[in-house]
Each structure stands twice: as C-alpha cells, then as structure tokens.
Amino acid sequence: MNRALEEAAKKLQEAASVVITIHTQPDGDALGGLLAMSRYLRKAGKKTCPTWGEEIRIPTHYRWLPGIDEIVDFSHCNGADVLITLDCANEHRLGLMEDRMIKFKTIINIDHHVDNSGFGTINVLDFNAGATCEIVYKLLKLMQADIDSDMATQLYTGIVTDTGRFQYQNTTSETLRIAADLVDLGAVPNLVFEKVYENVSFASLQLLALVLERAEFVKNTGLFYSYILDSDLKETGASMADSEVFIDYLRAAKEANVVAIFKETLEGKLRISLRSKGTIDVGTIARMGGGGGHRNAAGVTLDKTIDEAVDWINNRISTQKTAPTAG
Ligand code: 5GP
Ligand code: MN
Image (cartoon, rainbow, N blue to C red; front, side):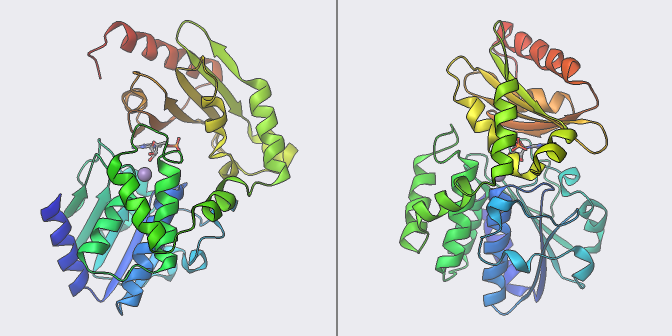
C-alpha cells in the first residue's frame, strides 16, 4: 500500500481541483473520510467538490459533522483533474458517479474492503484497516497535513462507526493508536458518541421498537433477523437512513450467530444488512447475491420476498457450516 499511498499523495499535491465521492447510502466511514479529505485539500489551496452519486440526503445522526453542508450534488462540480473514491469496493457502489468516472484521468481508489476490484488508476487499499478513515489518516500524515480538530472529529467518527465503537473484529491495535492520535488532535469521544448514538428521533425509536418486536430467531443456523417495510416509515415518520445502527441491537442477542435486517426499497426489492458474530463469513454470502462487504459486516440487495431471502441466507449459512474451509 505504501507505494500507492505515495503516488496518491504526489497526484494530490499536483492537482488544482479534486472531486471526492463515496458509496451511495453513505455511512460514517464514508462521510467522515469525504469531509476530512475535502477539508485538507481546501486548506491546501485546492478546489474540491465533495459529493456522491445519488440524491444527497444526510442521515440525521451525521448532520452535525463539521463541513457537512459543503457536500453538493455532482451538477455543482466543475471539471477536475482527479477523482477520489472512498470506501467503495467497486464501481457499482458509486451509484450515478460510476458513469461519470470516465471524465477523470486520475482516479484514486481508497478503500479497505477485501473484495475491492481495483478500479482506480491508483489503488490505495489496506484490507487490515478497520475503516477507510484509517487510510485517509495515513495519507494525510504522509502529506504532512496539519490535522485540525474538525478533521480529527471527522476521521474519528468514521473509525468509531465502522468498528462498531471499537468492538468488531476489524479493530486492531493500529485502529486504537490512530484513534488515540485523533483524540490528541481534538476529537472528543463522548461528544461523537452522543451525536451519533444518542441523537435519534422519537420516530426512529418507534421504528426500532417495531424491528425488535418482529425479530425472529432461526435456531439451527443461529440467524436472528428482522425487517423494515416502506409502510413502517410512513407510519412512524422515521427515515430508512436512521436505521443504520439498528442491527447493533440485534447483535446483542447471545444466541445470534448471524444477524440480518431486511429493508424494503422503493423499487420493491430487499436491501439486506448482514453481520456475523462468529465464523460465518457474511461477505462471501453477500457476494453470492451481487453484494459485498467484509467477513463480519456486509450488504446485498435481492429481488426476493422476506421469506425467500431468509431461506436464501439460511441455506448459505448451512453450507458454510458444513464446509468450514469454504469462503
Ligand atoms: P451495511 O449493512 O452497513 O449497509 O453494510 C455493511 C458493509 O458491507 C459495509 O462495509 C458496506 O460497505 C458493505 N456493503 C453493503 N452493501 C454492499 C453492496 O451492495 N456491495 C458491496 N460491494 N458492499 C456492500
Ligand atoms: Mn468502511
């Protein structure tokens, strides 16, 4: 990774104008990296355009992030020398930005997903990083950036959220060292915690109540799952984006081996968030349906009913269980 990191640093130092993008339905890692990268480049005198490839809707629990109002629709981005993609395993994760990639001579793909397709002209990949924000931190250090408290807060938020508050298996000693540095640089852990995890609307708590009430457990595979229908959003007034952390509540069940939340999309498909607490590799399962992700956290969209999707996942868990070397 070090050579790619150096190449990326050089390109960015030469660039006058940079578009930065992230995956659709962005999470804290994507948003934190986007904002920190943009802030650094602007302070270095460059024009930046932080965006992503769908209608820009910021989840409530990230609206407080410094610089969040600077994110714009791509129609406001003028020509640029370089495109940076953050936290995107492949081109399809870019949404509408996928087709716009050809406009850029240099594409710097910065990511930590094991299945990254290497679609950039420069690929800065670190599969051991707990979050893309860890890699952004290293890039900024290499560029001798003066990481201010806003940038520290943005990056720290990305790391906290992608590592499940430093509890998932992707948390390494390096994750914690980088986080410690970011705290020294001005990130305030309790403040980030309150803003991200204790900032939910009453409506989203009502939605959570529904999700917990409906949760089902499949004993022979250890799958614990629940679902959110489009009609639930109308009924409670909550938004789908506010449900990002719900899966953590399901994870808490000691019986759970694999956890899934099924979310009905506007196109009538099922967007599925998957988490594994044990040996099951949910990244492999998600890839079988055209999705992707990490061993312990992954996502996939299926054109199936909830019952069909439950069967689909159970079958794949059973296959992995009986063939422990698979995946
Ligand atoms: P989440 O359940 O939070 O949406 O996603 C969990 C993890 O899987 C994240 O790291 C996310 O980047 C990845 N992921 C989710 N959906 C997809 C998908 O459709 N394709 C790929 N390649 N990765 C996904
Ligand atoms: Mn990530």
